[in-house]
Image (cartoon, rainbow, N blue to C red):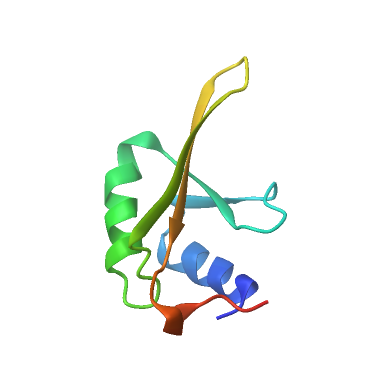
Length: 84
């Protein structure tokens, strides 16, 4: 799956719960409402086409206006790499 195919798949299958952000130069970035985070994370893990089963990084960002939390998730299955 290419990066664009992955972005389209996520956008299509999450019914607006994940909003794509244009700030990611290399990695896809999406915004999720805090109250939906657990359900979205579970779905990203359980979806047979995604299988994001590994939390690589957990970051906190202080924008001076608000705090943001960034989760970097990965699929550990070598058969499901993203190809550009």
